[in-house]
Amino acid sequence: MNKQMALISAAVLSVSMLPTWAEDAPMAEMDHSTMSGMDHSKKTDKEKTKAETMDHDHSKMDGMDHSKMKGMDHGSMESMQGGSAPADARDPHANSGGYSIESGQYALPGPRILKLADEYNFGMLLIDRFETVRTSDNTSSVYDLQAWYGRDYDRLVFKAEGDVDDGTLEEATTELLWGHAIATFWDTQLGVRYDNGEGPDRNWLAFGVQGLAPYWFEVDITGYIGENGRSALSLEAEYEVLITQKLIFQPRIEAEVYGKDDLQRGIGSGLSEVALGFRLRYEFVREFGPYVGVEWASKYGNTADIARAADQDTSETRAVAGVRFWF
Image (cartoon, rainbow, N blue to C red; front, side, top):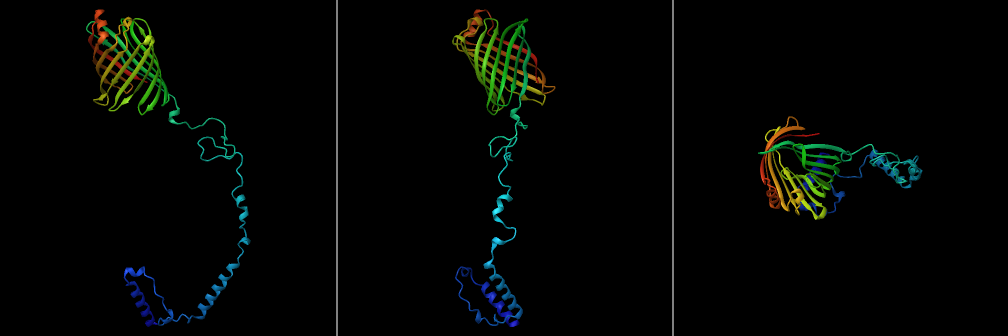
């Protein structure tokens, strides 16, 4: 027995030491009958009986009738799955109220309970400037506000700006616009503008864009088409520099351009007026902040000529003090 085991071990070792190229080569036929000590005919009676039993069992498998297996009625698989869907079946992936598979309609009536963020209406009122303006020979008041109500993509926008001198409304501009979001931080605006105060009233069709430019510049550009071929362009831009979380320095520029003269309102064609100012605001809370500042305003072109003819100044320095708040 020990001699047989030694021969087997030697054979296994010799095979394992073959070079790797020998793995792909076809194996030569092996004559098991010549292997010393490996007489497969010498099986014990127990082993022979077990082998014969296994051969006998497998031979019976060829004649097995699988259709007679108890409980395996493949024809009733449809009933195992529940059969046809009921008329009020609902799609579990439907996003509201359920969906009828057969009718193709929503099975449960009524509105959706779930609402997304852009389906709610919001509103805001911002008084950007509510200030007293002091020049070398006069004191007046200025208001500049904007309000909106609606959703993220569509909203109603209201703008109002004016000057009040000695209790008299000298100049006022009121706009009612529809705003629609076209990009992140940017809205298009379309509506009407109404000018009143000294001189005749004017009506305009307004269209423009408002939003947050790169580097956090707040920009509002609006074009206007009025009666009798009048046209105008307004540009406002401001930037906020946070000195601290509550102390804010705000540069601001405003310019107006008109397409034709309007002598009754003291406006000339071309670049009409430019105002550049700086305001320092302290916010006790985000919704409320008083400020002080200085502003320089100049008239240009035909507008400056009309002002000189009326013995008015074409430029002035203004000291301002006011409050900014919103809710």
